[in-house]
Length: 211
Image 1 (cartoon, helix red, strand yellow):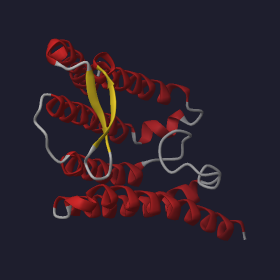
Image 2 (cartoon, helix red, strand yellow; image 1 turned 90 degrees about the vertical axis):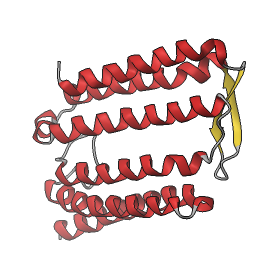
Image 3 (tube, helix red, strand yellow; image 1 turned 60 degrees about the vertical axis):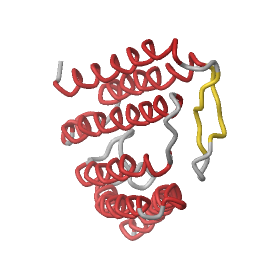
């Protein structure tokens, strides 16, 4: 088993252990969702509040294990496999961080949830930029549009741009540390706008190549 897989498995086991440990201490109704102003606007039962995230994390990890095996272009995934494996670690750590924040909040240690998530989102966006830079054409990982999937050249140009944009999105996201009232929007809006832009860009590059 790879070192990254062993590390991820340990994180998942710790998540379940944390849930079991804190189960007796938690209220029957657990805060599980916060709005853009950092106010709680969603609750779950104690069981799901403590164990939904570990279950999601486990399921996501199993899906990531499966992807390189079933992708018709699996040989291309192997070309950037070390970056993909590192991305899986970042995703698992990101979910674990959110889980820990949720635990602390429900133990009575209230704080600005949006602002607390900013560093994690910024780091994740920055690494997505790194992954996009090295990603090769495949069906599951990267900026998958009809046009990037139809041409290696369109894929490479779109991902080169996407890599830069997501690193910029990471920097904009981190500004949320200084502007907590709009922190969540500084994280969400650039990511959405850049995703739309790369979608359109891939079509433009494809049409130029077609001509």
